[in-house]
Image 1 (cartoon, rainbow, N blue to C red):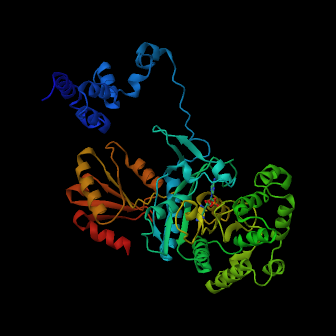
Image 2 (spheres, protein in one colour):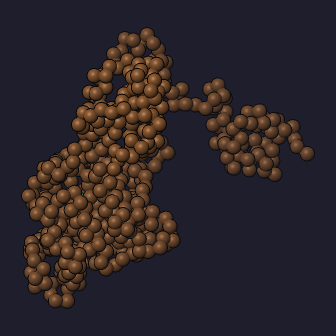
Image 3 (cartoon, rainbow, N blue to C red):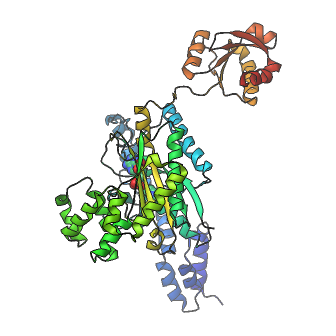
Length: 520
Ligand code: HAM
C-alpha cells in the first residue's frame, strides 16, 4: 500500500511534471519507485537533476528558461527609451576577413568551375560524397607541427565539445570510411567539393575559406592509383584550356626521406614530423626552425643530409644516392612510366624537394604548379596509407589530391581563359504592356517555361518598354516577348530577337514549336 508521503509525491509529480515527464532522468524515476524507505526516495528524487531543473522552471513562471530571460541586461535591451538614445553602429558590409561573398556573377563562375571538376570526376568513375563542415577538433589535432593544425577555426560549442570548421576533407573521409567498419567495398573512388576553413595569412590565392576539389582512391596500394589521379588532374587542366606549358606537376615520394632516416638510424616515429619540417625548409631557413628541430629530437646534421639529398633533381641522381634496390626509386620510376603510358609525361617532372606539408602522406606526393612561378601551389596530394591506422582503424591504402578554387581562377584569369559570366542564362523576358494584360503575360511565361526556356517575367506592371529592353540586355537575354492589346486580342505575342533585332508575332498556342525552332 502506498504511504501518504509517497502518494503526495506522486501527486506533485503528476501536477508539476506532467508536461515534462519525458525529461525526468532514469535515475530520478528509479529513486521514486525504489523499495527502500519512502523518505529516502523523497531525498533522492529531490536531488535528481529532473527535480532541480523542473522546480526552477516553476520558480520562473513555469516555462523553459530562455537565454534572453536569463540575460540580466534584457530589460535594457527591450527598453525603447534607452534604445532610442543609443545609435546602432552602421553595419560593416564586408564579409569576415579572408572570406568571400558570391554575388550571382561570382556564383556562375563558381558553378562553372565545379561543373568542370564534376565532369572530370565522373569521366574517371568517381562518386560524389559530402560531410559536415563542422567536425570534432580531435580529428585534426595531429602532433607533427603542421601549419594546418595551427590554423584551425576551433571553438567550444554550447555542449562544451571542442569542434572545428574543417580545414581539409581527408580526415572527414577517413572518419566516414572508419564508420562503416570495413563495410565499404574496396577499392572505391570518391570525390567531393567541400568548403574548407584555415586561419591563413592572406596572400594571392590563399584565403581563410576556399572550396577544394578532392579526388581520392581507397584500397589500391600500387602506383596505378597515383597515376590515375594525376591523369584526372591533367584532364581537368586540359578541359579549361591550360597546357603543359602553363602548368607542371612535380612528383616525389616520401620514401626517399624514410630511406635516408633509416640509413642514419633515426626511428620511424620521427618520420612524419621530419617530413613536415623539411617542407617548412622550402619557405624558411634552417636557423628559423631550430626550435622545431630540437622538439622532434633531430640532429642538425640529419636535416642537412636530408636537404642535400632532396636538392637532387633527377631520378638518376636519387638512384645514385639510394642505390638500385631502393623502394623509393622503384616507386617513382614506376609512377613516371605509368604517366608516360597515360600520355601525360609533358606535365610531370620528378622533384625530390617536394614533400608537402601534411604529416599523413607516406609515399608518392604531388604538387601542381604555375610554370611562370607567379602563383602558389595549384593543387597538392599524395599517398596516405597509414591515416586510418592513426585513428585506430585497419591499415588501408589510400591516395588523393586537393585542388583549391582560388589559385586556379587566378591562373585562368591571367591566361584569359575564363569565359564570360555576365549573362544570367535567361532566354526570354516576358512583358505585359499594361496591367490588364498581365494575366496573359503569366500564361505566355508559363508556356515558355514548360517548353524548356528560362524566362524572366517582368513583375512590375508600370514599367516602360524602353526599360524592359535595357533590363533584358542587362540579363543577357536572347528574346523579349511583349504582349500589347492588339497581340492579346489576336492571341499572339510579339517576340523580338535581341541579337539581330528581328521581330515576329507568334500565336500563343504555337509557343512550344517556336521554342523548339530556336533550339535547333
Ligand atoms: P593541401 O596541400 O593542404 O592538401 O591543399 C590542397 C590544395 O588546396 C592546395 O594546393 C590549394 O590549391 C588549396 N588550398 C589549401 N589551402 C588554401 C587556402 N588557404 N586558400 C586557398 N586555397 C587553399 C590537402 O588539403 C589534402 N587534404 C589534399 C588531399 C586529398 N590529399 C589527399 N587527398
